[in-house]
Image 1 (spheres, helix red, strand yellow):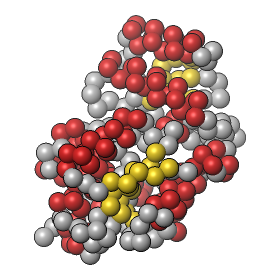
Image 2 (spheres, one colour):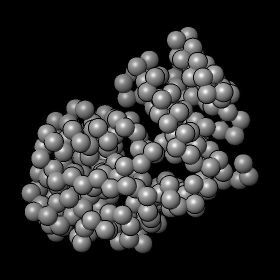
Image 3 (tube, helix red, strand yellow):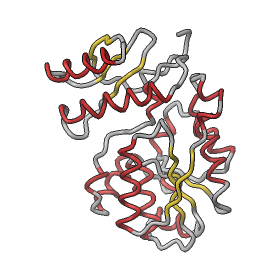
Length: 254
């Protein structure tokens, strides 16, 4: 029995918060394969969750026989979340775990891994307040180990997925979160995705000055797409730049 299997064996009624990214999806597969009798997969619907992620969760639930429940994430009803402070993720996860607690009496788990512990992740504070378990962390697994497990499970469609934080992470600190901005971000990234190598980090950032797209070596077609989408909504397009992890988080005055 692996360390992860040993952790999961003690959580028969686990409810896993599954976003559609590689970590939580792989955890759901591991728990399902472990035969947890009360396993529940919970996916939150929100303007901040790309439709591609929701479709991925539904597809895997259908193909592999997961017991899936969808909930309204509820964060847009929270003015503290919409204000988009630097600790916005705390309010997002607080709302999420509150909603999940209404559909399960068992423990809640996230797909966090060891690499996440070194980042600025206020959502982990909310997780601690809700006694959320992190099986990958408890099993001593980092991101590379999670991807290796996904490959071991032959999950080719998720094993090499790039990091996929919620769409609100594209909005610079201090700019109020709106469904309109998030829909634009999703539309821009969806339009540009076919023009970059699979697995490449691609971000459309809503900044205080205008729209910035982070992508490697943009070609003329990408520039034309970005210009047209911004012009269509009366937005200022500031251009392209290389991907910068966490670029939307401003710790000082905006």
